[in-house]
Length: 97
Image (tube, rainbow, N blue to C red; front, side):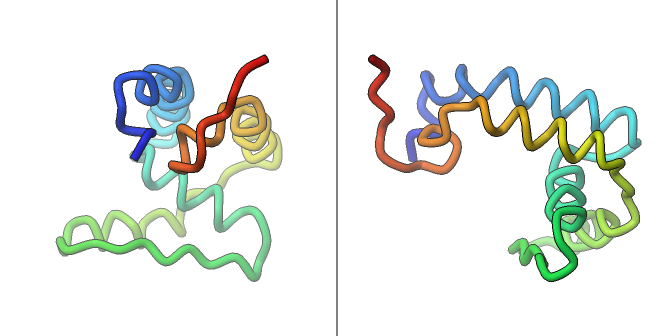
């Protein structure tokens, strides 16, 4: 899982730091912001997070109460658009030219 290698973590650090700022502003966790972002995208997108702990299930459900503005959704989209996705999603390595 390349997103958890030292290089992958370093590449994702800027995004995660930025997500933590948004989460603090919304009094939420970064995971809740991620779920709220998916819920805000389209009415037919329904994230299905897995969990083994009741407190995480409750936390996930609370993400439905978090309202992101269109500007916040757009900001997350733009940040993701400029990230090396292979490190985030564990795909094949992107070769920089």
